[in-house]
Structure formats: C-alpha cells, structure tokens
Figure: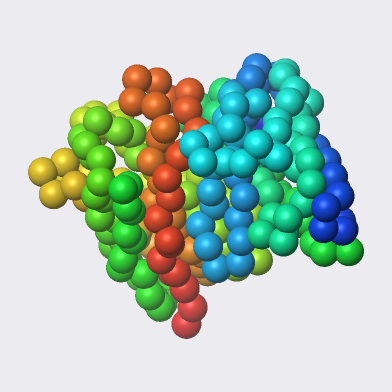
Length: 108
Length: 122
C-alpha cells in the first residue's frame, strides 16, 4: 500500500495570502495524484487531477505541481471560501487507492 | 447535472447488517466505474470498494473484504453496498463516488454523493 503523507496538519493563513500544502507518497505515483477540498458537513470536491490539471469549474488560484513522490497544492490568494480541509489521493496503485490524512487550512 | 444520492445508513448493533444505496442521475451510469469511500468521524478518507461499469470486476479494501459486497443495477442507475458483520470501526459516513474516466481505473473520483452515516454501536 502506498502511504500518502500530508504536511502540515494545520496551516494558518490570512485571507489574501498564499497557502502551500505538501503531499508525499511512499513510492512513486507518477502524476496520478489528485487534490480534494472538503468543507464541514460536505462531500469532498475534486480540485486537481494529474497532479496539475484543474477540474471543471475550479478557480485559477488553485494550482498543483509535482510528480513521482513529491507534490504541492498552492492557493495563490486565499478567499474566505477556501478555508477547508484538503486531501491528496494517489490513483496510480490501484485497486488500493489511498488518501493523505488531510491538511486543515484555517484563518489566521 | 450529475447527482449521487446515498441512502440506507443508520444505527446498527455490532454484528448486524445494513444495505446502502446510491441513486445516480445526470449521466450514463452504465459507462462509469463506481466506488464507495468512507470517513470515520473526525478522520480522513478511506477507499472501501470499487466496481467496474459492467459489474464484472470488483475490489475491496482489506478492512472490509469478506464482510462487504458491492453491486450495481445499471437498469436502475443504482449502486449498492451490502455490509455484514459490522464492527464499531465501520462507523463512518459512506460516500459513493464516480470515477472520472470511463476507460481506465487509473482515475480520480470526480463526483461524490452527500454521504450517509453508518453508526455501529450497542
């Protein structure tokens, strides 16, 4: 099983600032990496797939990068609606799709 | 628009059974692989089970293998999860999710239902 490790666990950011979230895979997942956003009481929403491709309707302030084992999600200028928990997920090693433990982005 | 609506959750005693359903609409259900993914209270996401578009290929996480059964009825645009021998650690919100691509299992999940809560407690 590929273990996905996200850091930090919690990120305190002021509105308008940049947020950088990290995700590391225990072995290479190529570019088969997705990012999801989850708000309280809601289902996860796909933000990024293929490590860097924004899903339909996702604002350009969200960007993803990386390949292999190291990945980054950047939110260029945090809006109030962006405060949430973010999960990375590898889908390279199927059928054992695995998620990171999440990074909570909170208001500083 | 794509909609996935889960139902069937509730409170069940350890060792009991429950059947979850997921009603799909807004897309050609029979074209898509589907999965169940769960989230224990205050915890992260755990993939549970996968079924191919025709239902011929099925996978389970080790944690539920032998206890849970995934199935689908393409005529009814519905996905199911039969859960037997339930344990306290199965307590979670269960989401059905659609695989984004129709031709490969190397795909993320692009649409999720709102989830249904399963609580296993005596």
